[in-house]
Length: 211
Length: 211
Image (tube, rainbow over the protein chains, first blue to last red):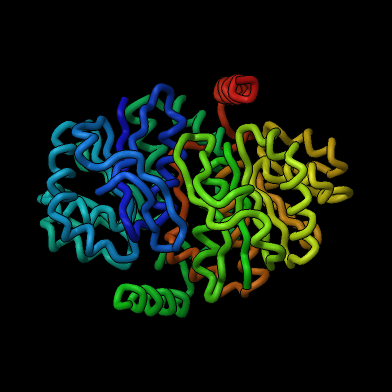
């Protein structure tokens, strides 16, 4: 079972590490961390991760995971990355995204006619790629799986493990990482957050994307 | 506001990235990633992270975060790390741990007489360091804050941001990372997981620690 993660400059750390922490615990999983070049990748939060392989070293995967970014536009415009995503997708059992990773899959033409989701602020942008935006935390459409913003990748990866490797394996991983969430506040979606918090976050993210 | 994370070989990725993703979004936070030497650190899941500074380059912090590991014993026995933790702790407003990070703080003598928690499988080991084990997801005792296994660091960091920077800031970060968890299974603690899953995870972790 080969599981490939696309890493790239400006990616969001938890978008990658949430599913990685779940999938790395699947028995006999071989993980491949892939970027345009092997070496360090700088995330959108500053810290750096290490990609072991460049794109051309990985030509197939059973599961392909694309994390998001505060601003994925450079990756969405990188023809070499998009070509690689299409080629690997042709071999996968599952092609999955976290947050705005779905916009990258969309730019690669892989979400045409599919239901998908992304970070709540970017949801309408999915239409640009022929996808139908769905405001749910995890959206399965055939072998394509999209999750909502940043932290949703943990839920998505557990659901995926349940489908592919069986529920007891998913439950064991959930228990190993003690994923019994108790958020101290009720503010994780625009449906439940106070309106002034929603406004503040909209302004902050719009500024980040313009910067 | 200076926030220092201890990175070390064999650390668990999500123990670090959960709180990092939350704390890196605090306005004006200066994050310091610190290890025995600057450079790459290999996690217990294989992937590598980059520490920008060696211990001696960071002598104080407002918040100190210590992630856990499947097997933190080497770090618990590293006198240079323990001395650094004691020195930085003397300057902090908050000294926090995720998962078995609390065993490292315990080994540094920083949990004597304190209530604390850790991964559910390691809870009793806190007694070795004069701490009182508490089976809760987040445990505050004065300026020391401990969280349960791996994923609990996200909840802990949001609670900490609420106390230190105000509830609206914590809510904005929660919304930015869309932390509205919907675990697909009920298996995140030994209280709710099926008994056979608890047994399987106990066996798996015991084998990992022996290996």
